[in-house]
Amino acid sequence: MNPACGDRRGTRTGYARHRRANQSACAACKEAEARYKTPTPRPVPECGTEAMFGRHRRRGERCATCRKAVTELDKVRKKNRRANAAPRPAEPIIHVPRNVFARLYLNASIADQLHAEQHIPENRIQRCVAEHNLAA
Image (cartoon, rainbow, N blue to C red; front, side, top):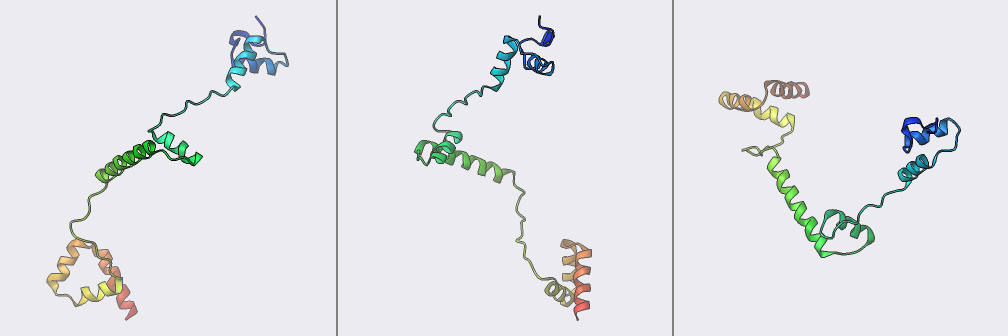
């Protein structure tokens, strides 16, 4: 057994131990390092998948099968996104400038003011009215 690699013979750790000891690595450790550094080729994706569609697109190719598969996948994702989305409010939301809201609130009847206070936080109403009073 080579003293440099010890119990890690035939591994990258053993190869690193050889390097630290300034020794030439044994054949088993060199082979382990070569296996690590050799890139493993990625398998070519099958036609009709999202990965293959991306490959076609990068190469400037057109493939109806892959396009159809990606379209179907997009439909499913969009459907799931809609299903998980927050529900829309029952009544439409109307955006009104603060000064306009303050004038409407101050000129409304008491019953209408109470109705507004049920739907809008009181601190927001007070802020709008205070800004209206400062501007006046």
